[in-house]
Length: 561
Image 1 (cartoon, rainbow, N blue to C red):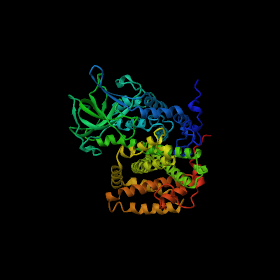
Image 2: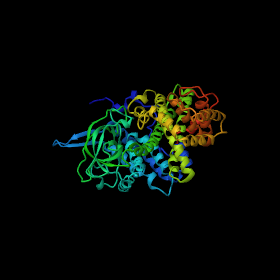
Image 3: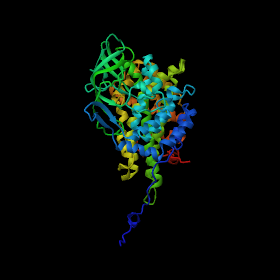
Image 4: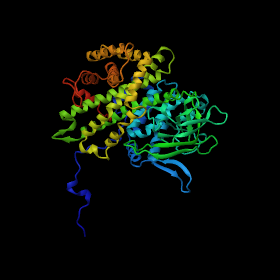
């Protein structure tokens, strides 16, 4: 008879001083900064729905879905067992569960369907902010489904047929014609090997079919096509009249498969739950969207809205990183005290909280400008001008800040944060993506210079926003005065490209500070102005003396009540 003890009773394996799993946390109720920002920007009517969604996405079950969707990467099925070309991507069931959760909640549709609550873009941003914490990979097709609506409106007949299904709270992953589905998802395929962001260098050809002026046949190769199992895609191709925007469905109007050849899936640093692919058009059916030869002007409507999501997602991931670091520090002890009571750790966490709250505040402020841009008169004009400049600035700045902040939050965990069982490695791999998607840093900076040079109303709208917060903090006032002086010279001397990154950084800081000084927690606003506008520290944990660390830690605390 064996007298060996079961492994669970070995005295050497007693588990102590380990934090509980960060799950079962309502991502809405536990995040004071998010709730305050959404209410401030006009989204209070959505609070109950967002509370329910926050409980769901923060649950242990949905957290597990995110890990499962990342471990079981999408697989490309080029041929079926009989040798017939099928070009399908198979996802783990958890990917589809995550998609269904977001679609049924209204994340991609709320901006277009709830006219009685004119804060749909703020609500959309809040849903995405939390969804990015469950699994940011699925936010890509959800974002494109949301963002395609304004572009489709350039072709009223297409919009009438497709927008109701794109706005339906129905997720249907079946691979079948759009006419047989109640809910649709949308993708985008613009870039090519030889051009990348320079889409005017595209070589894909669009030939008119018969006597039609709306139907085309495409021949060409696209280097990046994300979420290739979407029901249709906006793409760019050279038509007889120039670069044109077209809609490419996975199925032809006659119910047969459209030639849409998935050549391979990209082996990416992160974003493992989502498939990105190279595709080949070879006699592929497409429908024109907008005027022939004005493809960039048409598709930029979609890009502008996906750029909003490229602001919201890093803000959400930053909150997730900081919340996990604070959670760990609240429950883990070292050298005789909880980590959160250790002086240096407190400094680091407080600094990270300032970063997170500033990102949240700016993301929701930019989202409000999308709601107001739909208004008539002066309000709409000002919002459109503000959004034209603030959107690329925020997209640039928040994404530049994210990887360093995630790394610092990972370090707060020690070695445990470097292990794949933690969410931190997934977050770290994901953190550079949105800086690259929809225009990498240099492209965005050049777009900012273009807007400033061609659309002076953008500069005026941003200055109006910045000046409205003057008088709240002398460090902010001095920072904005220097910016205003630089803007005053824009009309006389164009900004040299070598200045673009510095200008975008300063604009990003000023826009964040403007919201915090007027509306933020006083301790957060003070720390931001001290550490970001007037401070000299470059690493997290170097806030100037006099900042209220206790108040900052209380502001960023994960609330379970």
